[in-house]
Image (cartoon, rainbow, N blue to C red; front, side, top):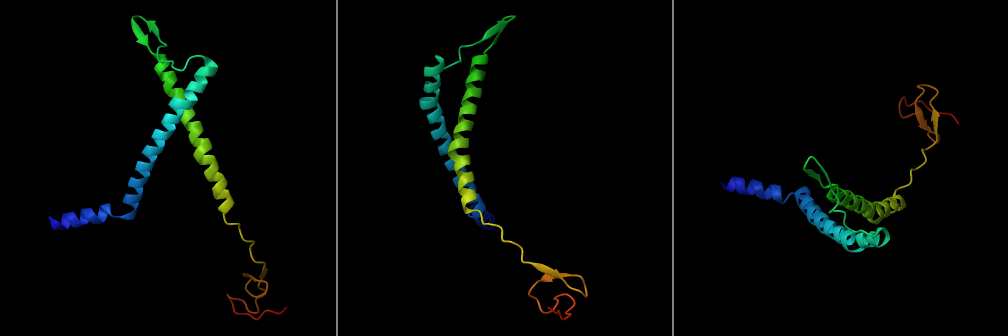
Length: 137
């Protein structure tokens, strides 16, 4: 039984499991912040422009079957607003940040061809690394 407990402990204390747990908690907290932003700021702004903040009451009936498309519209609009907020608040700034710190590609060192083995060697080389032929300048 103690072998199982120690194996479980090593699994839980592995770095990627802890990182994943932290990411889930932070993701849930960020989701709550974005949902609050959408419900309390962006949706009322849309209501001020469009006149109706909640489409949940919209529906139509066919053969005594009620199709509540308003709730679906609310979900689609909320999804699109959340996606826009995440794009402009997280993705765009991260792309700018990553581009700023992206290492620049170094220019490849100039090479020449070895006259003996036709290998590509640095221009300043005195001897070929492949066939060890002496190079003349």
